[in-house]
Amino acid sequence: MAAVIGIGIAAAILALQLREVKPEYGTYLALAAGVLIFAMTTEQLAQIADSFLQMESYLRVDSVYISAMLKIIGITYLSEFSCNICRDAGYHTISGQIEIFSKILILAMSLPIVAAFMETIENFL
Image 1 (tube, rainbow, N blue to C red):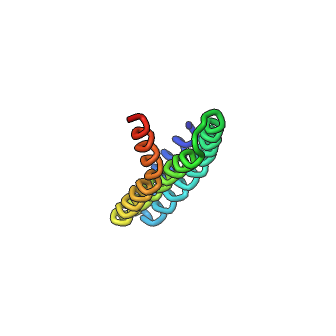
Image 2 (spheres, rainbow, N blue to C red):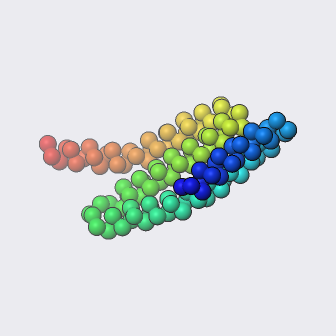
Image 3 (tube, one colour):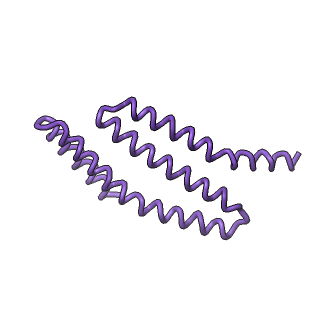
């Protein structure tokens, strides 16, 4: 955690200094720091995915639900990352479009889970 915080703060301070000289360099530095932090985060996401798969083996849960949940987590993280990069670069409209698309995609991916939940409720009634 300390490494991520250090990278983030150092990149932000350097990007502010570079923006006075050449604004595009600040954006490039922020993008590079974001990619580095993203790479560090994917290692943690892999561990989370392994934990979910282990839980799946303990419970009698259809793998479709675990897979959908992992995909939704991935979509959320990737869309947040790309939206922040676009906002930092000053492209708020593109950021908004990415957010809308990711929300629709998450909704579409969650429909089988919602349908199974509704079916379970129906069976209880």
